[in-house]
Image (cartoon, rainbow, N blue to C red; front, side, top):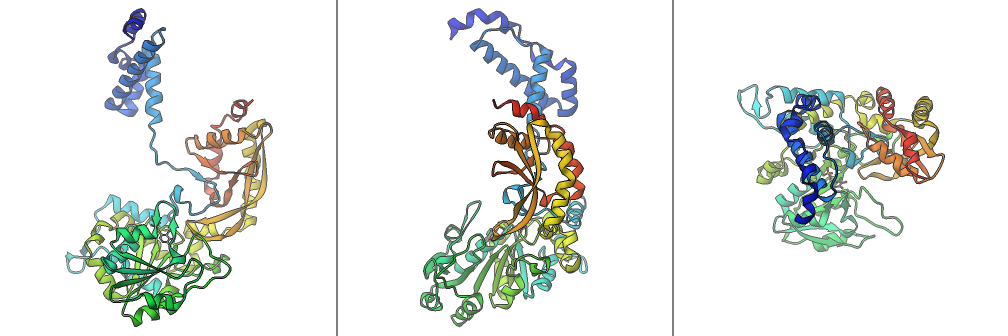
Length: 477
Ligand SMILES: *Cc1c(COP(=O)(O)O)cnc(C)c1O
């Protein structure tokens, strides 16, 4: 390398120093928006890279202005990673896009809890220390009919805490048909192992009978577990022991039954024209002493895991040191409380809770929106693409009602030329300042409008104006 380095020494010598780049007008703007430390770092990096490039391929050194431009690109590429996107995938509770959107009341409550001191663990009546769960306890009991309730980080944590509290070093009995895996590495056997419970599988994949459970229970058993098989169905020659019957079997052995509902709903969704998911109240009535469910699935709140049930058992959960490690912070407690409050007025829930609002939207309403947006979207996509309104199917997501799809409408974008342009278009939409996430299906980029509120339409069209659709099409011969 040293022999090669000789010829370009002069162009290397012309490479501006950090101070020279910092003195440009462009750098002054960068200093203003990104600060001294980040700007200087970026400039140093682009100078280092220019030096390395000149060593490999001799040529003219970039001047200070060019380097400042490069530094700008670097600084702007570091835009915050967690930024708003348009979820036009048709999956309402999209785990990778953050599941439920919060209701305004929940957002306001979280903001207030961020800005002000709150009586988190402080009893205002007595002026003494309070319990952070007390804010939610009463509401959860009222909405589910349970005796007591507690809340942790998410439903995975809720299941972990229950298993660890009641089956540490002991056996936890579960049907082979219910050993689920949920996206994002939640696998029931692994959670059981990490909770310190010995998993005892009973029955078979398709059929489990009461006697299978009875035969498995012994002095070493700590807990009987029932898992709602949320994200799949076993059909055909099947048998399962329902929670009512299982709770009798567990009670006869003096053991608690934990029913993990996953996406438990607090109300009967059939009143919104949706298929019926078991409600938490149903599960409590059926006799499980412990019922666990998620905060950010059908419930439509922030990420959280709820455990409701028998008072003495909940008290035991709260005494487990793991509870401290799995607890929820004040922002989420505030948002959860505000979300649960909305459930006290079910008649207005679909207006106020985005998850339900999206799920309850009828196809005709979505189709009308698609027709309204079609001309403007087509204009922004230019001549290289055709934009039509078409039918599609949305999903609840997060494992809720996996086989039930919701009739919906989409803007279908098809390239007038090569099909290969489609992936380029999808990538370009993901690269917008507010990325638009659709779905490529049947030779079209499908933008399902189910989750697009009317108030967001203008923002969607504005961000689409950034697109240079003709040049996207031109990239593919
Ligand atoms: C989703 C789900 C979980 C995990 O809940 P998170 O809130 O995502 O942690 C556990 N069990 C079942 C049955 C589920 O559907």
